[in-house]
Length: 369
Image (cartoon, rainbow, N blue to C red; front, side, top):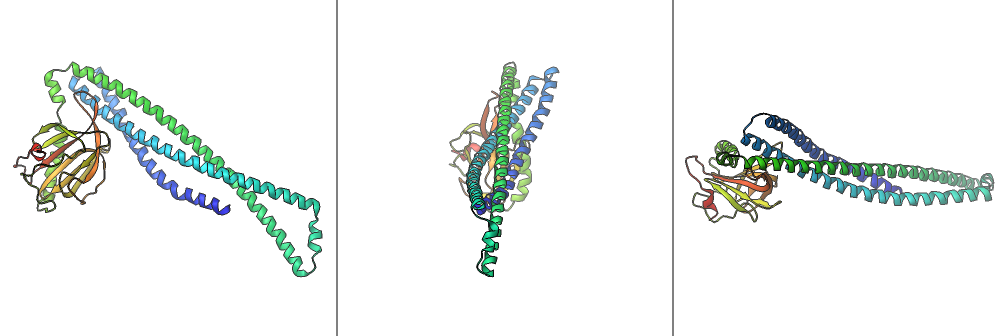
């Protein structure tokens, strides 16, 4: 029984720090998102009171909806993590309760035996009725051992009771934490619906020119192009995936079961389902992974010889910088993005292909023919 208790305590000591680290990282993400949302709410309040353009208001609402969606995803993950910890704690309480019952039975039996011995025999008579000095010493040692064993059993019983009580308190705290997280999650979903309705109403009032500007992906493309300028210096002379060229066609879309909703020269906006895998269009080397600290979205850049493919808006990445990847190898998972025309949350990436020289025109549409 004592060894079982020690094993349980060791398991608690070794697993708790790992859970804490994961939980701390998730809490930091949630805190960052909540702080960013509060800041955006203040900006939105100013825009609503002022005479800002409809386009500016919709842009702000789109950013806010995307942040709320990221926060909802983080809250969902937190609740799943807490439920997993609750299940583990419930098992732990059950196991400790079984040990506690066994110890209580053992201590009760020990008390009954001690009482019977006290009533039916005299300790001094037991000791002094020894037939020899050696037997005298053995009887004293036996009594001392019995006393020590009883003390240890009582100590184990007390410690186990305290452990059970503490685990029950921890379990109750985790359950309350889940309840609080669910209430916060419901509030975020309600606010996101309100903001989406306001954005849709504002879009209906916008002119056709404003809508056209609003629906563009210029900001994403500009960010990608700025990164490519730096990466061309790094990939100059690269031979990994060197068979790629401007004439390469018939490649598989980088989004599992995805479809292209828009081509724009070297870029393709590709939608898919939630959790869809993102794959490399060709063999090559991962030369850069960048991350937005606020919404946790990733951009991945892969060199194919001196050509570079980029995959923007990933929720998770399963490759590392400088890693060699194969054609159609999974590199990450699709992330959500607000459709600026409808304010609906979609799952999409912005794919782009870049030649060694900016003077060379590349067409993303040619790759997937």
